[in-house]
Amino acid sequence: MTEVIATTPGLFPLPDWAKEELSDLKGHQKDDLISGDEGEAVLEAYDRARNEVVETQEAAGLDRIVEGQLRWDDMLAHPLVVHDNVETRGIVRYYDNNNFYREPVVTGELSYDGDVAAELDAAGAVDQAVLPGPYSLSELATDEHYGDEAAFLDGVAEFLAGETEALPEVETLFLLEPSLVTDPPGDGEDRRASAAIDRVAAAADADTDVVVHTYWGAIPEKPYAHLMDADVDAIGFDFVNDHEENVYNIQEYGTKESIAVGVVDGQNTLVETPAEIAERVEWVEENVPAQSFETVYATANTELFYLPVNRFEAKLEALAAAPAEVSR
Image (cartoon, rainbow, N blue to C red; front, side, top):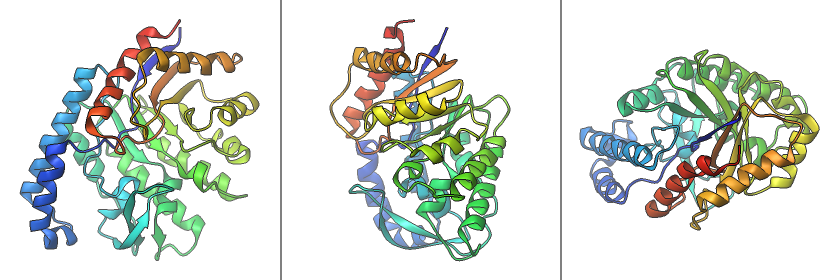
């Protein structure tokens, strides 16, 4: 029997009180933030906000609880932005939307940092970790150290592997790889991207299921075929933005024994009902009849920080209720 697990790709919106409080605190601590020292008051506010979003997920009844990535002001670029050998030099558009991040420029070796592991340790009751995938993280950054794209991708993969090894024990690790869709790798690079993902996945604990979640459309055929070579437990698909091409990839090239289905719109304030989510999960299963899934991760298609807090919370509740309505 297929197990349906309600989860999210993380990167939650800050609670409203935290937005106001942190904006005020950061305004007073501008010099400290530039130097990388957030200050005790800022860290304490993030701690309270983190506890709140963990409790929100628990109250909603989600099957997997994430830390929320509330400190990730630079979204998926965050693990590089906070690194000692990375400089931030300007504001860059975050994919094709109205969000922006500080461009991370890698000026030295990407040695172990431990920032993500520390956040998970602080969160406590978390059973799913979230990291950017190596290909997307390399695409979001600029290299001034490694010398060429292949070496840079390898360096980013080694960095993320080290961060993964340090994670506390979790049930699931989501590696977020939207750049496989928005800026797909070309010939040769597609093999390297798959190998980089494989390197990070291999660093996870043997009992942790690794999900490579892609979104903002469908991966082109050739990069998808190479992604299938990576030793991961599941690939995630954005069935909100492009259900036809994603189903085609699965029908043509297969997929892993488990799957993540992005069936809740992470950027639209319209809240799906549990029944609608269940229908979308069933639609995916019906359209790939040759595939029998061990686990289906029902999730939002994208990060959730785009949403107002009340809509975000409502979507969590709908996601959590959906598995009970999926026909077995």
